[in-house]
Length: 83
Ligand code: SF4
Image (cartoon, rainbow, N blue to C red):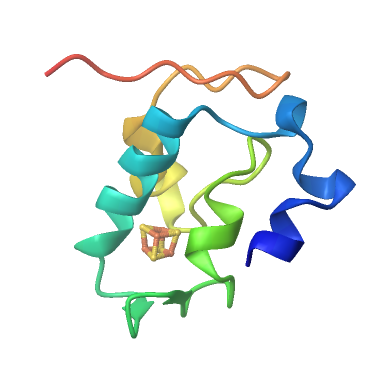
């Protein structure tokens, strides 16, 4: 995985910050679509990899579970919901 994260597709400007990454992992960890703790069966993606990317979203309807991280701007910045 570290090799993938060093590619230009995962350049720092394309990534969410570490807190947002952890929040995404946490949301996925309780999702029935997560297989073996790694693969999203809704999109086939490896979550510990794609959760870094600003432009990615949870594929579930209605904005998906990552939709709880509201405020995804076109540039990819994300605001979290204060609960
Ligand atoms: S990306 Fe969405 S559908 Fe896939 S495992 Fe995470 S929360 Fe579930």
